[in-house]
Structure formats: C-alpha cells, structure tokens
Image (cartoon, rainbow, N blue to C red; front, side):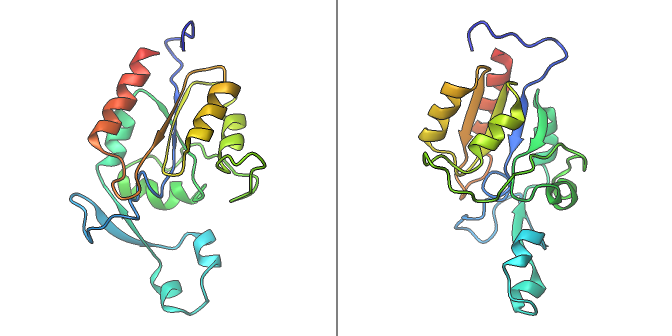
Length: 184
C-alpha cells in the first residue's frame, strides 16, 4: 500500500459476494434481527433442482438485510458484484437491499472451476477483472492462500475480508472497510 495514491475521482472497488456476506445462509437462528426472508429463483440454483419438486416451486430461501444497500452505498467504494448470481444479483438482490440495479458484474469464465494451486476458484478471474485497481473483496470462502496470492500478484492495495456465513456483514466489517478506504 505504501506509495500508492488514488486520484480524487478514483475510488477503490468493493467486490461483493451474495451468499455469506449479504445472505448469511448458515445462520443458526431462523430469523436474524433486521433481515427479511425472500424466495428467489436464480437460474444456476434452479438448474440444479428437480423440475416440479417442492424446492423448485418454492424457490431458494435467501435472507437479506434491507439496510445493507444504503450502508454499502455510503462507503467510499465503487460497488461491483463478485458472485455466482452474476447479473441476477442486480435483478434479485439489489432491489431487496436498496442497491442500484446496474452494478458492474464479474462474469466468471467457469463456475466452481478447480484451481491447480488450490486457490478459491474466484481469485484469479477476480484479479484479472480488477485490472490492477485497489479493491476490497468480501466473501465467505476466502482463505489465507488467496490472500497470499493476491499480495504476490496484485500491485495495488487489496483487502480480502472473509465474512462468516452465519453472521453476514456486521458493524465491524463496515468500520473496517471504511477505515481501509480512508487510508488510501
């Protein structure tokens, strides 16, 4: 991070995963405070369901916090989706949390591709997409291996923030993101 300066018009990227950070899918409580339950039908999930089955008819249970959009927009970042939901995040997640429906989207070349070095399958495509820009990435699957790889192969500042899928984004995460961006 030393020596790197953002211009006054450049903001770092905030690369958002849905499941884990925004949808705490592993939460133990049936109803998290402030979250609302949605039944959504993302195409990748639907393709893995038996047509006509109860799950197929009901849709995927997703819990989202309607206040997260305003909190994310208030951060000094340019927001982008880094999720398997890809463009469906704009159509299904954005309206539920109050984000604009036209955020940039990382289009993964192959979902869940096995990496030869054991990296999380999103890491290499995400770095190519960021094109050397500073970024913070929030995801529930980031490992130390990914953090080390980004540090070795990305010249701009990067914050990889692993979010626990039981908790989703929390106050401390918003504070950390704000402080990290301010240090740029």
